[in-house]
Image (cartoon, rainbow over all chains, first blue to last red; front, side, top):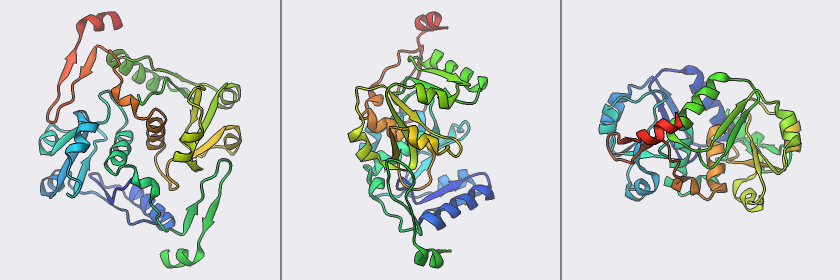
Amino acid sequence: MFGADEIIIDTKDEHIEQNIRSVIDRFGGSFSIRSGVKARRFVKDFKGTIVHLTMYGETLENAINEIDQNNDLLIIVGAEKVPAEYYELATINVSVGNQPHSEVAALALFLDRFTSGSWMKKDFNGPVRIQPSKKGKNVQINEDIKEEGL
Amino acid sequence: MFGADEIIIDTKDEHIEQNIRSVIDRFGGSFSIRSGVKARRFVKDFKGTIVHLTMYGETLENAINEIDQNNDLLIIVGAEKVPAEYYELATINVSVGNQPHSEVAALALFLDRFTSGSWMKKDFNGPVRIQPSKKGKNVQINEDIKEEGL
């Protein structure tokens, strides 16, 4: 969703892994998830641009202009207070607003700007497809894909 | 944040009310919060455009073009499964992506598009102000405003 390829979580959480995999099985896409990954090690070994989302960071507009679109990108969001070390490990600290706000909102808006909104046009080719509708629910189930996919 | 004026929550939650008010006291702005408001009654009495965010709704792009910017706007997001009735009470059901996703992400992206990103330029004139910074934290405390505000 919103153009990300993978989510990596420090704390092991099989429930959230199953939940995300179930969504991918039904709705398609090549998104993946890993939890129980040592964050510090992972960040230090990462080859590419490291963005840390924090209300203390550089403005979103300036940051988007600076970040090389051709590099791999790691985005750090902390559910709790992020240790000071990550402010240094990051290539750039980026703020989506300079007031306290949801990390989920910040991540969505960062990805939206970084991908220039291209996530809106993406087709995941999953067995379950929803057709936009002003009222009610319009769901298509493609059984052929479903049998292959599940 | 993101251009909204008020948040109204069905379930009474004094903890979240205090939390939001504490943020407003420190960072400024005229945002307000009410919890324990009967949602069904509130939606039925609302005069203006009612947007219900759901992955089943009309595309974000089409919806933004249709919604009258001069009307008051109520945005419905459900933490749990939203009763079918709200799909009918809404002026328009709007999808921020047709796959399962965070309601918080959907709300942030909807408000961003609806306000054409103008939230990025907003100054809340609060006692605490954060200056954007690529590394570290740059916080300004304005004691004059603080004494008036607290």
